[in-house]
Image (cartoon, rainbow, N blue to C red):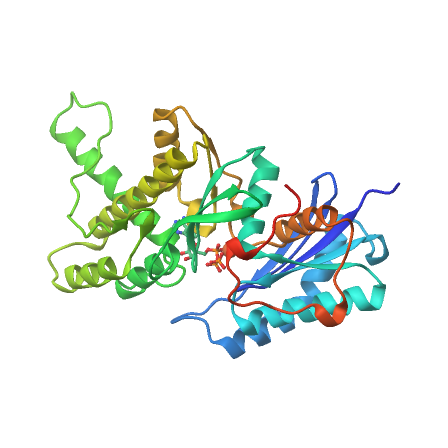
Length: 352
Ligand code: ATP
Ligand code: FE2
């Protein structure tokens, strides 16, 4: 029998992505185009226009890179939840069109779960706690009794949106996360270079002192709103440099994320941690998670960046899992809807 190949469409937020993945988990293509703005956030109508305009090009690129024709695709999947209505609608439309025109079975998948499943596929983590840290989402997720449960989450904004808001306030532009990381790294290396030039005997690197910031962990939940206000006030006072604030903010919020991840691991007895989401690209966050895992004898997993940020390959892979898990049943085209507010723990995981 021919191997099943799935074409997955990701459009929950600013990325229009198409991935093509085989039943054995080989990623044949992972193409994307992202909507960006010079200043400010997403304008929903412009996002709709962006995704509509790039759809054909991204589709053609993906098929070309994968070296397959549309009639070799055995399954279409699309991210039906959660996300912005104007973005989700484009993916659902493209999916319905491709499935209907080419008579291909169709499935919808949850974006947050797709982040976790692509991580499990690529890192070989078996039953991890996932720290899903992206722009809009911050969740600690783990599998229990048929569903991916949310053990902890942000009580207000996502950690990525928090970093982006702080970065915008101090004039670093969007997306802010990578710029905050760069300035923090520079601050640490300047600090160490100065120390070494003062005292030639110092060989190893050390961490600069932290600016004290609000640390908001409630059980396994986190919150960033108060911290954001506090940071803005600190920056506006003129008493602190951008660099030292970037350093202190990373240390503080990543410590919060590591703490709640570790608590979830301890409560569930799981001994693997998997990272997902755009903020997980951050090397300092990775290092802090790795160290926590080492200290408790657990395994740490992180896929490469293209699979951490929003991507079509994860939707394609989750499509294959869902399709096989429910006995190869697709959904009717007229039922291919969107669920902007669906939560991770509402989805029945039939493939585990
Ligand atoms: P989701 O829909 O899952 O919430 P998203 O639309 O926010 O995802 P992602 O690509 O997962 O998209 O994440 C984008 C976020 O990741 C942005 O907030 C960005 O600032 C942040 N980010 C990217 N790289 C880094 C980094 N190196 N350090 C910190 N944050 C980063
Ligand atoms: Fe995402």
